[in-house]
Structure formats: structure tokens, C-alpha cells
Image 1 (cartoon, one colour):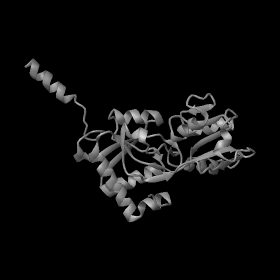
Image 2 (tube, helix red, strand yellow):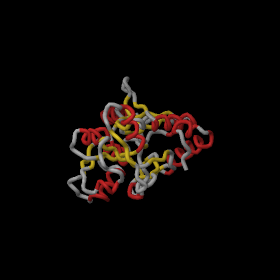
Image 3 (spheres, one colour):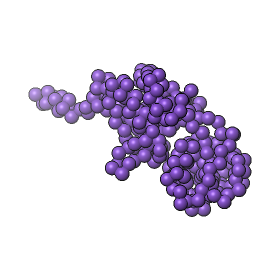
Image 4 (cartoon, helix red, strand yellow):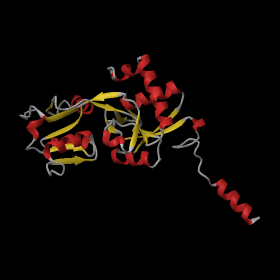
Length: 250
């Protein structure tokens, strides 16, 4: 009787995985990690909701596939661990598909195209990326912006100011702790638009290659990748992806 009661107790205290990461496929609910500090792609609105272009795209995919999604604000670096450990089903956070990341994670087909952009004070003499070779540059840590700056200044350069979020990287530049900030064009342009009283200018450079965002999944989860690719393709075919982003994605 004691053993029977113990068994019943164990079953009664089990975690209900029907609505969480790695749960029963029949539930059709997927938990998604993001870094909601990256307006206009993903950010918190005044009511505390996670919103943005990336969020709109995933919600549109969910509608096409008739699945339920839940977004969780993990922060930039923790979201990679969350995907790898299976805490979430996938991540959406303006994540550029790179060969290095593909060694550890799987990615959907691209759903968004971007490029790096330089943000400097309005009176700066910077006209191209090469002009920053003797400067201090702020970036969000472990982003593609961080990588391109490492290529210019050196892998361990003390002139690289790496912060946890892109808004902090921009603040470091505005406060005089860096001469320039580098990040994805959508985020840089959004900041400049929303802060017209801050005298800033943007600098483009053809040295920055076009980048493509993908939905990031735990390595080996081919079933989920196929499902997400199906959703992305439907959005491309019916024009909804262009409607959300404003342009066609190759």
C-alpha cells in the first residue's frame, strides 16, 4: 500500500508538458524566447506586452499553421542557452544566420534581410567603417555587429565597448564612452527616429554584407524546422511577409 501511494504521488506531481517546450505535439503550443530590447523588431510596449516586427511575423506564421505561441523575454545571451537546453521550442530575436551559429543550432529559412549601420554624433567626421580603426566602438555583445568590429579593431581590443543590449550600446556612445555605435540598420534607424532631439547621424558602408534573420531551433529538431519553413513560405507566397516587413526577402 505504501509503495502504491508513493507511485500515485509521483504521478500526481509530474510536470504538465502539454503546453510547454517539448510538450505534446497535439497541443500545438510553442514557447519562444526573445530579447525584447531591440525595437522595432522586439520590445515591450507600455502595457508590458512583447511586440515588434519579429513578433508580428511569428504570430502570422502561427495563424497560417493554426498553432498557439507564447513569447518569453529571456535577454540576448540567455536565449541561446534556453534553446540549447530545451527550455523553449525556438527563438526569434533578429538572429542572423551564420556558419558559426549553425554548428550549434538549426535555423529556418530566412525571413528578414538586414545590414550593419554606424551611428555617430552629428558632428563626427566618420564617413566609412575604416575611419573607426583608431576609435572606441560600442556594440551589443556577441552580435554580428560585435564580430565585424572585432575584425576591424582586434578580437580582444580594449576599444570595443560590448554591452548587454543595443540601447545600452547607443547610450555608451551618446555619453562619450565610445565614438560610434554599430548595430542592425532597423534598430539604429528606429532609435534615431524616436530620439530627434539627440543630434546623431548614420553612416552606411558597402563593406557590411547583407545579413539574414532566421528562427533558431535546437540542433536536430528537423520536424520543427520543416514546420516553421512551411509557415514562412506561406507568408512569402501570400504576400503577408512583405506586408509586415515592407520588402521582399530573397
